[in-house]
Length: 125
Length: 359
Image 1 (cartoon, rainbow over the protein chains, first blue to last red):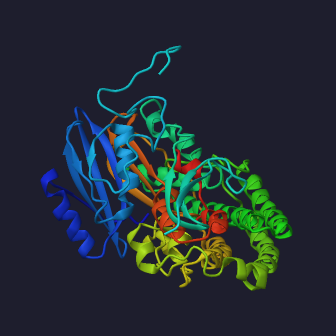
Image 2: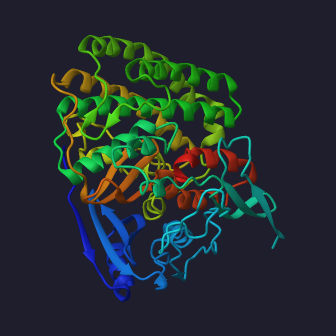
Image 3: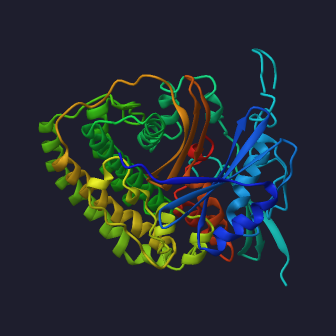
């Protein structure tokens, strides 16, 4: 099978806006923003593509770290940023559309957050 | 300035098979803004990855969607195979292409029917769904399932299609093409349909690209993005013509899907001609240790399965970015400035799959 070349660059939260701006100026499109738990921390992947060239930016943050929104540069980012907040509980500052935790109406608040959410049988969430 | 009012659209609405809500900000009959809201049926599939072994999770991934279930299963398996560096037999890769393209035919015909129903052309709706039955019959005959196929697994596929059956299938495609030609002629040439869809819900090429539109929603605005061009599976062995249209309105998105029906039958014919003999799976040992963003072209557009394993049977993360999720911001842009009466047709024109979105 043909494997797609993929690169991931780790950056600091403080460099996020500048790095995303570079992708915006070079004509990349935002493919997705996704979050992964790694122990006590969260990895947030920002994926971009241009002419089938796929690149990722990765920041690693604590759950309480406030992340700046990139919706000023990629207007559609609000959908991923609200998702990141609603499922993982990571605060995002300056979203163009902030649903304030109501985009995903889950029974359990922040179901993917750290420490893991556990519900015993019969218990109401 | 007229007084602004907010009209709720959905979550239950005749054109919506699944729940999505839009708060429409109106000035008289004109939509000034639309604020989307989802999450009514969120199922937490991604969370299940912590409870199911990576090979069992194939069944969960497939159930993300009831229309393009095969593509979800295949994309998940291909992601795992990339992490584990599994060399999948060529015959299995061609079979995946054949079933993926039948899924696309099934999805597009279903959508064309729903779209016809949305603009009040019930005969056309019934015609589209009648043709779709031929596709579902083939899926059922070759995999055992009409909706959930269960034919894909990590390392290959579970079922083979005999060469004789493939030859018969290619002959059947001629009949299918003929029926689809009759259908699409009406969609593309009927004056009342053109009048209903032209210049409705227009989004420019730049907006579609920068707002993250994918699939026919992007291609209808002239953005030639198609993940099959990355050559995953057996697609690098086939000639693919990416269908685009330039107007960016509901008619363009309809035209792209109508024309893509014939691209799919062409790909199936090519795959049936080129498929080699040989095994359909390999034995898989070990567990995934690493990460991969597997991208594939689902009927609605680019699908991303991000998978991360730590060497155990349980993945650390499965993140599924579905095309409808990323097509919501472009939808909001399409709705800004439209007439209230056009909202149902515009919403349906992105082919929203809330089942996928609420994975």
